[in-house]
Image (cartoon, rainbow, N blue to C red; front, side):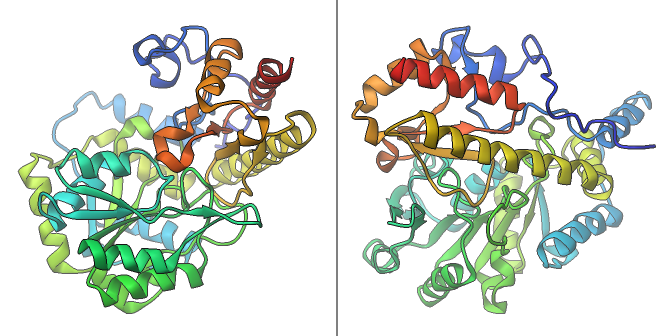
Length: 393
């Protein structure tokens, strides 16, 4: 049997498929005829091996409580070791319905109401939501854009914020969504050493680990042995293989005390066994999906280059942040002279595009837009053309 789903140019009709991305514009306050390039799921069919495995399981016809045993972990471990040079241990693994669930559980497990939790805005907006919704305080070590067109960390501010606010927990995003950084060993080690010195637990969201186009993804727990005692690592096949609706993530917590506190919050929330389809999809993705993954990765890389060239040649005043990781491109519109409010109006109602407004990632994101480029190139080209006509036509 060969992989069948390698045609990434074909447009798959997703309307009327219960798709959050395509079928809920009205509920989100958007015109119903917008072209959506917002939420981080791909417009590509996943690996045909995953399709076949799920169909085979459906034909069994019984959907009672299910779980997995050691072979599941060995498959996940093999992917992490081959792709990222890290060999986690089986008892470190805690499965959750998603990375955002894990973030929320970590906030509840490792902090108390009123405590400060450190994040690095502009950052994936659920980071601040899981902090504030659980009665904790958001403190931001805001990233800054350098002359090299990449975002950087102010390490002095990072340590100062920890000390001044008595921070116990830091939510790290690597690769970083939305600014596209893949943090280097030097950067991660400086962060890690500061956190160890001040007793700060690091929750490392590495869900985009398989989308690196410059540099190399480094698992935070693998940088130094001492970091294992101070962190939890959040992974999932959901971004890599377009499996978001399977609601499954693999969370690794080497420190037994931290793991027990985390599990206690899962128990308190009533979370136990996960859906069998997600477990099967994960096993199949990591054991048989590599051909699909590599082909998809190459296609997305070309889409990123396509956007960069289009922005440079056809969108004066717009700049694309140098892109290292994720399939979510960060565009700066400040050079157009258009206000952030007017920009929203033009994009939504004139261009008829649904992107992610930069302001939802924090105040430092105002004037930016995040665009999902994991789609057929014809769709991406249409979106960029609409953008040009709305801004300059």
